[in-house]
Image 1: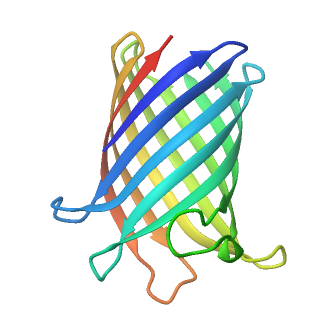
Image 2: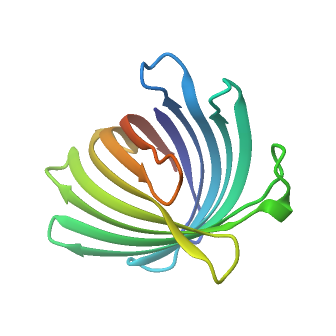
Length: 194
């Protein structure tokens, strides 16, 4: 479940906050709790960038939460052909170590590539399919694929600048001793303020 509040700023800047809670398998407890603050700039109709700070609390097997935070920079390129919109996003991110017991010296860099296709069904409904690949590096010479994520979603425009979203996300871990595959139903609401 997520909630996004977004505000347009002058000179094609946008800022916002996002709150996201991912529940465990039986929907009784929060597995992960995210909060993000971001600033975006639209450079042209096709190209934009976003700087994001994320704070995260993730439940451990010991039934307590591990706190983390990170800073990320997204570069997005968008191309629209008829009713289909294609988007490529490159993200570089770094764990900061301001929250929790991990220090900044233990921080690593992460890289992500995401491709998303969105089809406008009519003026109220949009359907999208996205694939994302995660890479992590403790140093610049050791780049390792860690996750692959696929998400299908359906977005409904409730009224102007109000959106409700439903979807399904599958994420698979790689190159770890005990890889997890996560299956998540997604429900979200986005409110945009002028």
